[in-house]
Length: 406
Image (cartoon, rainbow, N blue to C red; front, side):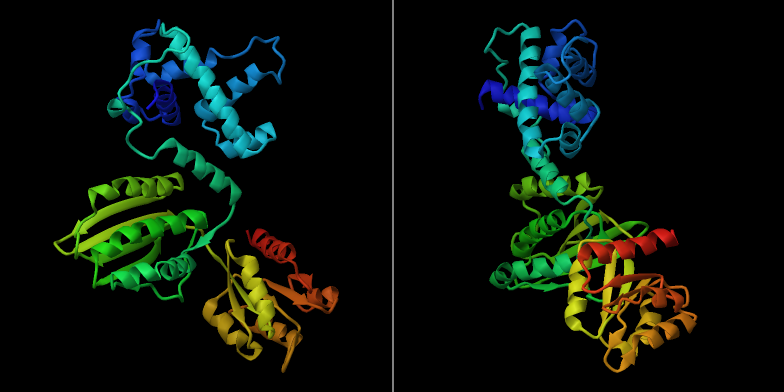
């Protein structure tokens, strides 16, 4: 690797792990400290001081390039702001932040090299093998992670849906190695704050490693939720390779990185002599169950799409006659109710829901083409949304009821 590229890579890695001294222990950047006027400083202290030394004079224009370089470095690395936060603060795109961040790093790198006595265009001759950034997830992965995270900010992910999607995606791999994939029952609902793209990539990464090692056997996936965490256990009987190969370590490190950046964890284990196991721990989101009662299946499918990727777990009910029984079983936090339904009077059904002890206090949102919101309120409805219902209006009504309950 070119000496300049290696120097910048080491610098970026050290700044990304500024408050993790154990990861910086072997960084070759320590050589710069020995040549400075603060030989006893830690690498974190040394780099922080180097950034602060770039502070422009007080009479410098606030929008000058010098202030831009300093602010990018200071807020990104010292204050630990994400690229998404910087994009909002600087009113620009994340990709522009990435470009300007790269320029700011080059400015800091040149300053550090000059202070260490290197002439212009000269850089330390470090060996790639003694690179402190050689271990762990590479910084381009971290940058790509933050761009992807910002694009899906605020979304939730349903684990069961991701498992089904991954199962379909990996059908050719499962067929090649004659492995059966056993998923948990789809009657359960587990929600995590980890974005869908990362959940899916984590599952794909682990299964593409595990399946070849279990040729002719089975891989079982179990899911449980406890104390604010979703635990996904993936187990497969050993065959073929029979272990997590060394060549897979980089990919496993990337999977572990994605989990840790989302507040999760990955544990890899071999149990006994014939079992491989991966345990994923993900941050859980309390799902708010919604019972949607409407005899129009197309409307229910629309409401289901509206709530995908949100904190709301929607259970559709196209049989109004069985709605009260289903409400007793599911114990929803919110009920949305159509009024004009074949064979059942929606107003009468709302009265039955209000009179039943199990649903007497459950918020009811009337979704109807009938503009009778005053009547709905008088008969016990908590909110009213006029059809056709947009996604924004539907979710806003659900969120209003959650806020009122809180």
